[in-house]
Amino acid sequence: MRFLVTGSNGLVGSRVCALLEKGGHEVVGLGRGPRRTEGAYRYVECDLTRDTDVAAALEAAAPEVIIHPASMTEVDACERDPEQAYAANVAAVAAVGRGARKLGAHLVHVSTDYVFDGDHGPYDEQALPNPRGVYALTKHMGEQAARTFVPGCAIARTAVVYGWPAAGRPNFGAWLVGAFEKGQQVRLFEDQFVSASFADSVAAMLVELGERKLGGIWNTCGADVVDRVSFGRSLCEVFGFDPGLITPTRLVDMKLASPRPLRSGLKVDKVRSQLRTQPLSLSESLARFHAAWMAQRGA
Ligand SMILES: NC(=O)C1=CN([C@@H]2O[C@H](COP(=O)(O)OP(=O)(O)OC[C@H]3O[C@@H](n4cnc5c(N)ncnc54)[C@H](OP(=O)(O)O)[C@@H]3O)[C@@H](O)[C@H]2O)C=CC1
Ligand SMILES: Cc1cn([C@H]2C[C@H](O)[C@@H](COP(=O)(O)OP(=O)(O)O[C@H]3O[C@@H](C)C(=O)[C@@H](O)[C@H]3O)O2)c(=O)[nH]c1=O
Image (cartoon, rainbow, N blue to C red):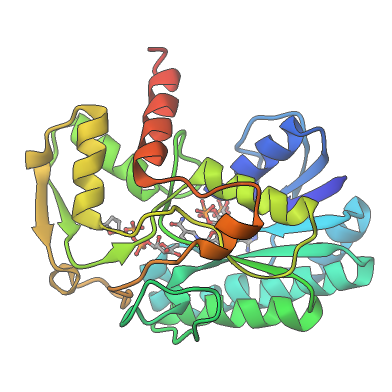
């Protein structure tokens, strides 16, 4: 099948491209600026906030399926720059959706657990979003934009994605490993509960949604809901780092620009029962994360 993947320089997009290539699919990766990932798949430079460029790139690639992870993902930067956040997380989705509609392509749109307020998580696919903060609001609007142009699209919500090697912005897991390796103290939120997700596993679920052209909402994330301190301590155990480097703190004490959901987390019963790709437990995810880290160090 012919796939087009946006955000191919990013964490999720790079994994999706690699997996599709491995699966024998024809892949076009779309990214902003020069290519920053390996692989034999075709790379096309495209700023998704430029409607006419998006239309032209999609038409030229003529994909059967589009997987759309590209997004402005720095939560606090979105809060400070709503114009940019709207352009990347809403208008760009509309542009991709319009192109998909014109081509009759299936669309797998990638979204987030942050569409929920985090008052009563974990959430299943039926739960009603109540976004707080600019990143969350724009991601929620992005979901509506995708559904407006491609009613049969898949909305794949994921959460706290981490992986090695880190592509795109520094991810939570890679950031922790970097700090612990240097013996640096980190302050971790003890009161935010999340479905942390291993990037390769998320990519595998997105690929299955694309290959099977499934529509509707899907929680494509890790199987366990965990607070950030427990995640850090589990990571220390698997990697052999000192858990004493973790100072538990409350999210509110970090005085971040954007609000974040506290009791978040996504339920994975639907994915478990309907996808062949099964969500990974935290311990399996961390074991794979560690293996990838060791492999890159040549160990
Ligand atoms: N990472 C996480 O913890 C989570 C992510 N998600 C969602 O998953 C998806 C993938 O995230 P992830 O891979 O981790 O994020 P990354 O930040 O690693 O990748 C996002 C990519 O989108 C690209 N991009 C942003 N704006 C544009 C634009 N205007 N034109 C073209 N490309 C653009 C970025 O390009 P550039 O490199 O040039 O900036 C980057 O390569 C996103 O939709 C995100 O909302 C959901 C929950 C958690
Ligand atoms: C989690 C955490 C982060 N930090 C720092 C690291 C980093 O500089 C900054 C933000 O961290 P994170 O990126 O992990 O947190 P955050 O930006 O909230 O992560 C979110 O990203 C978006 C894309 C999503 O969709 C969400 O699911 C979620 O993964 O705060 C701490 O100091 N302590 C902590 O406990």
